[in-house]
Length: 408
Image 1 (tube, one colour):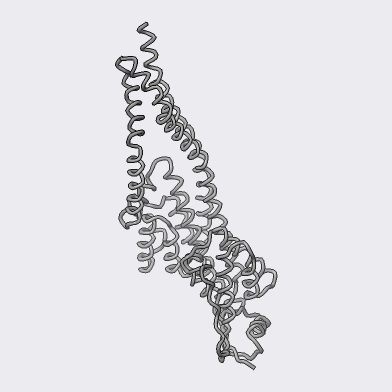
Image 2: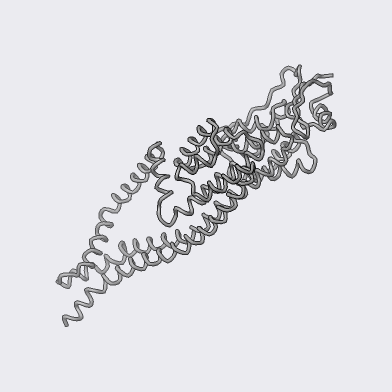
């Protein structure tokens, strides 16, 4: 009978390791579960020769590919539900890998299942795909495995990504209508400059009169687009490429993100989303037992803002020297007083994760209010600008007719 070495955790998180005899790995895992232990790693001491994990099929998924957020959220929800129903981890992963709908997900879960069969932990297997399963996700799974509370870790991951997805949908939904209005208005103006104004230009020139300044400006813009429009398009295209390259540099990325935190109208929306994401991510990591220094490293990677990343890096150095969390954040000038005050109260009470969760809820609510405020402001502003542009075109076209009428 084969011998298996194992590592497991009980309900209190105490580690257990040793060896046991079983006919196969599945029976070994069932034996550990009968003892009330959660298997972390089960490996056959003398594995059969020639048994290798099947490689991923070519072209299905590579470590550099990324699973969409909704796919990751659905995977976490399904895995949580299957484990709650009593299914073993290996069987649950195998069942999910056979579901249709996403080729990348099926490919990676097939490999994850084979890793688990060979004794690799779930977190170690998921860590092979850093773009599909970010550090935050892997750390939650690893903490859940260590404490024997994998289902709770998945539940926290589901709540985190649901809120992140909801916030993203709120921002996107709030900007759809203003963007549509802006695009439609620009297209109308371009149509007038290219097709409408040239038809009247020759008529105006035949009048043999000095045209009003607005009309001459409008004709000049129309002629410029007709003659040099391709140059404008190339210039815009090259400018976008140059801007993207500059933004990818360290200095450019920092300058752009600092600008976003100060830009009128949108800055409160961007700040609220950043504060909520910081607090929610750090809270979820700490409540699942991730060490604070490692948690700050992960939060830094998920900040998506170079200014905040710099402050979080400084915060980690201060915490390493024994400082609190709230002190360095208050000194940075980036985080508001309310944020640091609430965090300071949580530190004094020894309830930092709970305090961070309250901060996240507070700024989630503020994000919702800011979205409504931004849409309330930006819609009439866009309408005024578009109406002014269309009105300028209309008046510029009518002024020569008014002059002609007055000369009769």
